[in-house]
Image 1: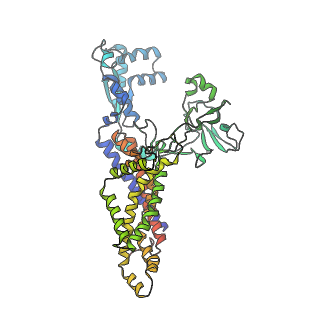
Image 2 (image 1 turned 90 degrees about the vertical axis):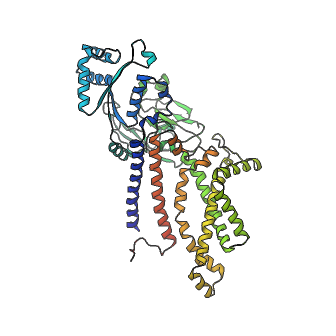
Image 3 (image 1 turned 60 degrees about the horizontal axis):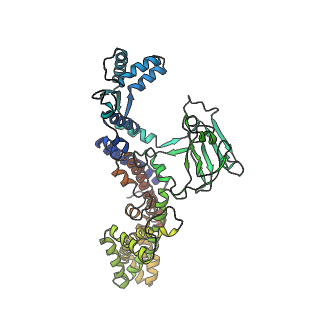
Length: 526
């Protein structure tokens, strides 16, 4: 079994990598990069040169290319002592006037052009039409260089950056943050240092808290390693897909918080999420200086709701349990009373679910549930009532019930016509004994294989059901990303789905071998 699992894991990893590579080739190799601006409100407000510069800045941010403005090049020369501030100010004027041949700037323009062209960059200049018309035309002339990233570089960067390990050297060495290191405490300062709450606090790390304990499941949290599936361009701009799926939602939840300066307050700030931002304390408001003592100032907030994955999983797992609890026994009864009333009634239900479009019967259940039973028909993050889960769960479970009924009935009937059943009858066993001791065990084997997949894929959500009931789950994340050309989210969600698929298949095989000892993955076929 161990060798089999190892082999399947290796094949699974290869499959995941292959799927992600194919998706990235389709997105970054065959689709125009301009499509990422389809839903960018800032981009649409830009004009001419400003739009061009914004375009290249975003392309660099999203990993399409390296972009170097002429002004940044001059700043670097100033830092290196090659030119002084006065010369830099005169040289940068090329980007602020229409004069391309100024003696003051020609030397540095030539250096800029030669250097970056020798590095494989393309040097380009955006020109305004007239000096007087620059405001209307959308900005002044700009000189810059850019170099496209080859697809192979993007692939390598993505896979090598999937997991990052936080350490005391994450903050750049040029930033003066004092003594770098990790501190272990049994009394977390966030709680005023008064109650027992172990934590590991870092200085020089990206996250201030690398390990901490709070009242939220799973109670012990860590930031030693982080999963990076890919940054969002538009859906949740600048936020990683993994964070988007796992971040809490809903109304703010306040509680007693002790800030690093010692200030006690009722706040929704989650200081355990603090991350480093260079210069943020100095550039912040007066309030910042009253709260923080260092540049670990970027924090998230505590909210009462679950994450996207959380809502999807709650609805999904309960619907899966409901489907198996109802579907398997009913399918068993249908097979026991083949062509009888129960069988015909169950067949009508199965045909109804198969024939009617899912959107239609979901709206039907929504209408009936709201009208007859006065159940909530739309999700509300502000409510504490658990009734909001009822209709989404029922709508998601009933198709699965029909599917399990159908396959259970079929497998049972197939087994009932087998030779070993005839021998069992001739041996004097009753129909009940044959069903419970032989037919049921054999018929359930192929169904067992799908159980891990059903449970695991509860996290991915249901697109139509979540949209109809306005569930803030993960179901619509991929379709929304495709509609918005949010390529980072598309790749990240694809990676997530591919990993879940591999895990569910392996667990399905293991569970099937546990149910049926005759199935062995260690012996070779003869």
